Length: 253
Image (tube, rainbow, N blue to C red):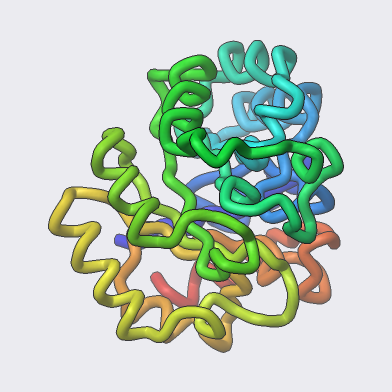
């Protein structure tokens, strides 16, 4: 059965997500980009809030983009991840193919990616340094050209080679365009078939709403990831609503 992942930015939102029926709670800071990494203190607070709740869903943590780590290694985040032991971890690859990418932090924008360097090697190395025991999610951006990230085929191949358990297809630019503005349903179905063949779970994100949810469900992903769709007013920078999470979850039960 398809699971619902809800991205949250505070303990209050985390509890709202769980009360609404989220299967997975994902910690991120939407002001810092598609996979914006929250502060160590916030990750710890959300972890503690979930542990104190009557329901204990798996915890997922977004760790930003790979160039951000190359520009400024985060020992505080590493220590927090070891202390909280999230089930899922993910690092984006925006900016590994080009420097002039919008919506990256100043640190990431200043990162000069060597023409001979391999994002795959750097990605694997960082994963091993942060937490080998967590389930790593390979992130492919549907708007890869705009994000300056590897294409979906390359990320899928990397996920298979490096024993990732999940492939997430998301959008890097958080504008009005949904996942389907970049990929046709037939393309997503072909990706779904490949992930099934290789034993990978498929997660889909990127402006998924109740309006386009039927198209997403037809692809039969293992996980549907949302934030804006379950926030007040449909704004990803607003607050997660337990009622909206419940309505969204009920739409594909």
